[in-house]
Image (cartoon, one colour):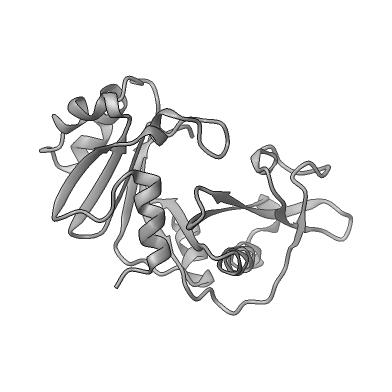
Length: 220
């Protein structure tokens, strides 16, 4: 049975959950409003091996439903034009979550996103971010929490090239996931299908691949 927090998150984030077999296109006001970082997410889909919910702005439901009979591999490239943003990129990857993060030791420190020396992507967050610094105070790796709603919080992680291969990312993800669970939400983790490094981080941090997929139209 699906964890209640994840069920509530998907219903809130997409506009409907669950759904019967196949692809279900639903309208949601959230697709026409800026998300956690101030940018639009005009099309987001999450699905398990038997059922997928594709969330789009209400005024684009008819146009997107006209594509619903296509295989997903043909549907995804057609989504930007169907939601009125033909030049926007598409994303296609795994949707993961964890109720039991790997028992890896903490490695980062929670600091304000306005702290000096952080990369631009971490400064987008409105609450503390989890950061690892080197012996000289230089930034090595970091993680942020995208609080989509009260029930589901998505994790993002990044490591500078010189610090890769040390296991920092997996430890940050596990540490951030424990914080999300402590806050009463379920941690989620999304990555592109061809990003094997991110997939390895997810697996090592306790986010198994359950065969769920997420795709959509939103900024790179």
